Amino acid sequence: MPKGRPEIVVTPDLSTLIEIAVKRVAARISQARSTVAICLTGGSTPKPIYQRFATEPYRSELPWNSIQWFWGDDRFVPLDDERSNAGMARAAFLDRLPIPPANIHAIPTSAPNPHEAALQYEKELKRFYGCHRLDPERPLFDLVLMGLGSDGHTASLFPGDTALSEKDCWVVGVEKAGLPPFVPRVSLTFPVLASTREMIFLVSGQDKRDAVDLVLSGQDLPAARAHAIGNLVWLMDRSAAPEAYRVSSGGP
Ligand code: 6PG
Image (cartoon, rainbow, N blue to C red):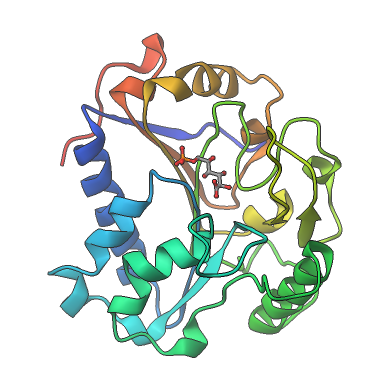
């Protein structure tokens, strides 16, 4: 971890992880002064977290007009494809809430190819930020949610890919990475993901334990390169926690 030690929260089970994640996201939203920018992750772990936002008390209490939604990565598939991260989040909560369409900034997978989509999304992020250079004093996001693959990937930044060390582009097209069958993807790069007041990794399940162990012990896996200007939090359930971390530290 390049920038300080992460906060590690281990919950007894997945349902507690979901509750804590929902409360942390809601707390971050309430702390923001006006506009809140949240960067979502894909995968299966966040889905029940997203679904909770469409229920009370969050449905009534969160300032939906003031929250801008972005994605850290997506598969280059149409929105209605079941592999679409934006499609998943829309179905889980965004489409069920009174959110102005202009607040939803999905990665444009109708672009001609992933590289063009990356260029378009980079433009969109810069337009929202109001500048072409990231200022550490003024993070792009209030909160970035991240997931972890059992191979150590995060967002769509996979082991061995050149995108891991990208410093200039904000967004990249990822043609061939991960395990076959390959699905082309689009991903934000580490410096852009790091431009946040808080980054929370959401990790559940025994199949993630070895990767968590390697990342937290400093092995050079993609997720170990993730950092944040603000707080970096690893929120995991006990089944994903390596032995040394298996004492639960997070209650509801
Ligand atoms: C995606 C993300 C990926 C994901 C991890 C964890 O799949 O869209 O790119 O980084 O967050 O693979 O996924 P699970 O939550 O399904 O384990």
